[in-house]
Image (cartoon, rainbow, N blue to C red; front, side, top):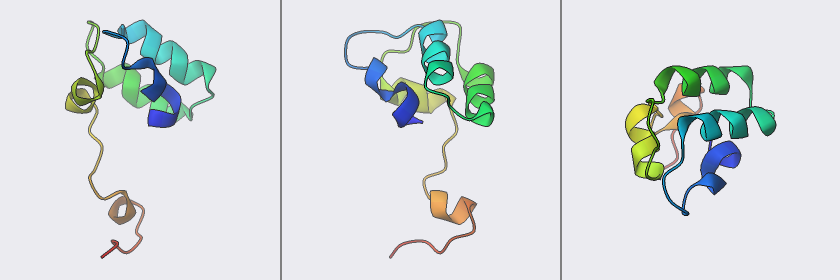
Length: 71
């Protein structure tokens, strides 16, 4: 997700429309765009912590993919 929208943060609040436009412009997978579209509030986000409050990203992505967790 950060590959598509991460660079928008660090210069002030980021509007919802800008996050969605960046995901679309960077050819994010349709599912990522759908998740963002459904989860983002109708207000600017103040940073990555604010983004994570709205988008449910598992801490262990390996477990989600069926891969063993790193130790």
